[in-house]
Length: 291
Image 1 (spheres, rainbow, N blue to C red):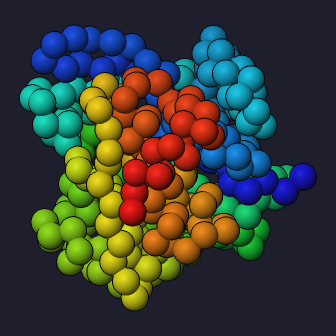
Image 2 (spheres, rainbow, N blue to C red):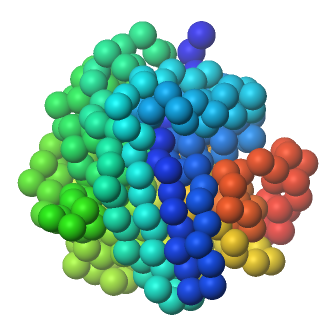
């Protein structure tokens, strides 16, 4: 079987702390992305690393229709996401445990039109592994967070200088970032300016999420759509849902229409603290709100 999209990333046991509550959820960019892709009708695979005690995450994906390829490790990745204010772009991330780095043999036998790498930190998916992935001839998408984030001595995730930026982005078709990450790498707070600089580093298309919506730059045109939602319950997984939705829809649609599907799917996801579990009918209804 050839998959439409294959998500790669470590599962994360997330502790989410806001001014009003503390809650525990199953995280990981691959997890949010795979649920979004399967909800949109994609033939979806997920490659992950986690402790066998957390196998329920794999079981949930399989129940949803995703083909999962887990590697069981000594630890699952643990992540604490601290939101000190009501601004959901302002957060502190702490990672006391990691499930380790991916190896090329974990995707060796998988055929996919698109591979989307949703790493949590730089060492999780090394550039030499990205080179091996590129040899498969598929389109590659990466989430910028997994390549600029490192861990300081207190296990706090920080953005740090990325020496292999142009080598990695030269291998990349889709680059997904949020506004904070885009500004860090480019020095530009203006999203359009940041997108154009990111594009100059090598990717074919740039996707930037921010608190109000999503922006796409394909080298010729800028496309922007807002999130249309009744309430925000789940900020975590916003970009993962948006990135996976966009790159899957781009297999059959142009950027102008793909971004509408991505914005709609992400809006629905943010109304819950779980991955996207809405029906196609519900997603289509939300898409219809976009002109």
